[in-house]
Length: 117
Image (tube, rainbow, N blue to C red; front, side, top):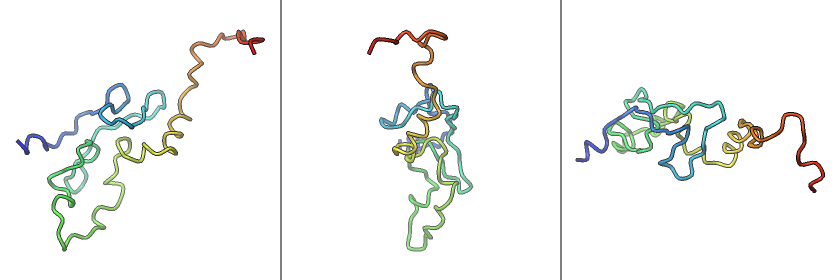
């Protein structure tokens, strides 16, 4: 049963440019940034599947002889399914790429809010 649960899959895990299985994950909708699928890095470890456990991972096979530097570098970080997107700075980055929410409801030539304040 454990093998079935930990099968490596590079299938899409997003729905409508969101990662709904992660409660605090930001929405990429309207930012122009495409959510990327999980990938297998050069060490045979699945990155970006949100399971954080891979049979070939040095973390799963750690010993006194394991050099921690083996897990350094971009090949260990998923571009869109990474905990770093939950930081305030990266959320602001995504928000700055979105069109203002009022755009579809604004009149093209009349300021209908004039004199309402």
